[in-house]
Length: 146
Image: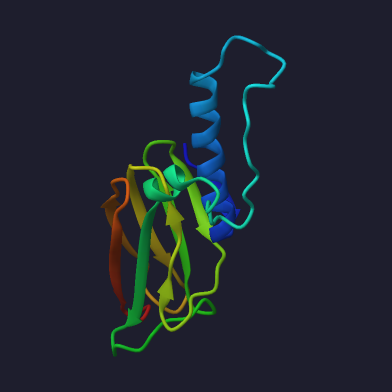
């Protein structure tokens, strides 16, 4: 069963960073349950600039979306949905698709299914596996809905 969440790009990046930091902090625990040894940061802008190790692990995905005429598709006409295969969680990327480009950020090295959903166009789907530090691009050419 796939859970569905509606998150912005920054929320997705922050969620993935927080989960990774929590897992690392849990492994490094000294057994003191007062939480004093687990320092985490609530990085709400998704930049991770304060921790260079997390920044290096981040992966970037650029999604280019065009119609069959090569014209860029906007957020008004399409939505980007991403399923994380490791967690089976579906994310709807709420960021603006500008000039046919969406750029969700991920730090987890895993496989994702990216689906472009639209009422005006046929849905399109691609799968991509990301490794730490990857900068990948997916291109979609949407056909008009019949």
